[in-house]
Amino acid sequence: MSVKDKVARGQLSVYKAVTAKYQKFPLPIGFNVCQVGAYTVSEAKAEIDQALTVGYQEITLTVSQDYNVGTWVYTRTATEIKEIIDYIKSKGVNANLKIHSLDAREMKEALTLDIEAWKTEYLAYITAIVNTGILVQYVYVLNECGTMYEDVTMVTWINEVITLLKTIGRAGISFSEFPGVDRCLNTIKDNLQVIGVNHYPVASSEAMAQIVTIDDMVESFSVWNPKEWIETQNRLYPNTDVTITEIGCPTYWENYAFPALTLYEGKTLTDSNGESTARYLNAFIKLFKNCNVKGLAVWYSNSHLTSPVLKVLEYWKGV
Image 1 (cartoon, rainbow, N blue to C red):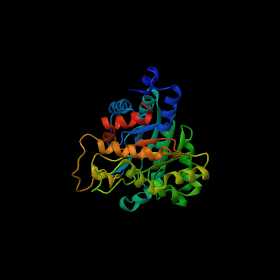
Image 2: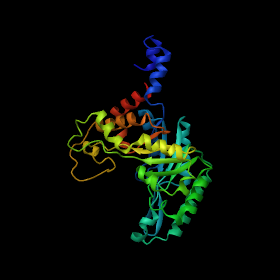
Image 3: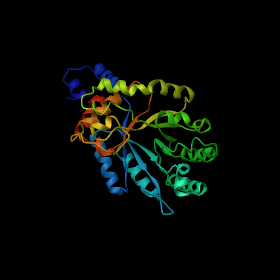
Image 4: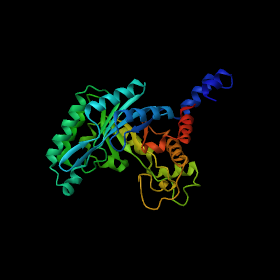
């Protein structure tokens, strides 16, 4: 029975209903769509509809850049981005945009990339997106491109990209874990309006995965000291939001020990109904409910569209 029904039947006062709901998780729990592969616009819209049906409260459109035989390839054109963002907003929820890209400096030796040519290409793509006139809540770029925002020669260009994106939303970078943020140069962080963190803490050993308790998982997650780390960012950058841009684990119990890995050898404990993913998400929200983040967004889309996950979302929304 929902909180609303309990109030209507006199089983719960309005005051207690509001308090109970607030004490759970009042911030939006979001969903990353179009994570892998070249989704058609119709497929993207279908995934958005499914995510909203399960109970996610905001949607992040993920776009990727790749390099194929001398050609830059993007999973979404600027026009398609606008159409999908407009569709998300038509559903009455916030839309975010997350632009993944090659870490050009890491790939230089492997692909002999011309970094200046890459920068020109990337900036042209960002400009095309801005010129569509879209507006989003948050826009993230240079996902996990660690060697770039630790490089003083990249500062001016990165800040140019961030400043341009501020015209369509609160602009920032999605980093790999908390240390990735810490390594970013202050001359870049000073220009960010949002710090996004892709965070995949270990929940347990493989052997304990099917019997570990939620509280034990929360304790395992706590080794990163997220509350203290986030408070430090809030103090150092009071005008910059902090969000968790990726969380979750695939539906294999062994992934409790390796949540950031989609595939690895030796996985045998398949979770057919999604209970492992739901429990991981439940523990994560329980820990982060007392942290000053502006929202969380799940990764591994198929793993987070199950009935057990729906129940977790309903619980934390106070349904």
